[in-house]
Image (tube, rainbow, N blue to C red):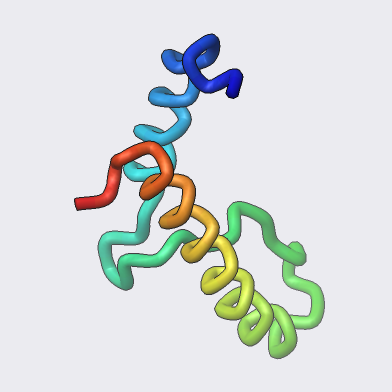
Length: 68
């Protein structure tokens, strides 16, 4: 219900998310890391988080008419 009030900020955030999409894989990767700790676990977990983030981002983009 507040989307019209914050439309400019929402559009800016959606533009940012579109620009952040991985050109190589089409995913949205986590923007955080484990700073070199538990590398084997992080490589698996990072891909799992990429799936969650990608689905959430696509849902948000679709909700605002930004997915063709």
